[in-house]
Length: 263
Image (cartoon, rainbow, N blue to C red):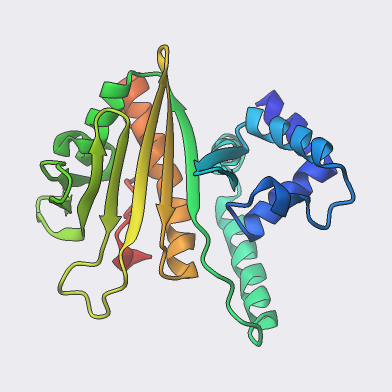
């Protein structure tokens, strides 16, 4: 936590985070634009943010794309905000966002960014893979059974664990490389009133001794509304997953509904 506060103390690093919040997934060259600072200095600031867990780097071919990682901010929120003034702060935030929407009503909509979330789990890669693909385990920390044989090309279903067996999300398995990489689509169910284009979720599991770095990348999001929804949903789901694997129990909170219909 000290590294996070140290990283946030510098105005240049806060500016870099603001730029990633406005447009996630930027290269070093893009982040250097409009900054009166040498490329090497920007690199040093980014290294501090990466070490603090506030920025994560995803390689795409020869490019290194930088993504804002909300995990440390979420931990601060859980520790110092959630149990105190959350309702009042949410009301203030809602008013602020509504005012911003009115102010931006005449401008062209911004492209929906890719969502990236990184968390570190004290567990083995096989344990994390099983937690992502075992229907009974997903029901414990997600509130839904994720059902599939997890073979490339197979279907998967996100079934409620409330006894109704209703399916909120369907999709296909695009890639499965146990225990390190799983790629699936998130799609509306066939009975949805206005089906949207499927989004794509990639789980990347990188083991290091007894620690696993789990990176979740959610791409091809259809609109800002769904981006906002999954930005709240993924931290809750993954915090529950981390708690289950590290302590044997989930957090004292209701599982988050990640279905597109609720975004």
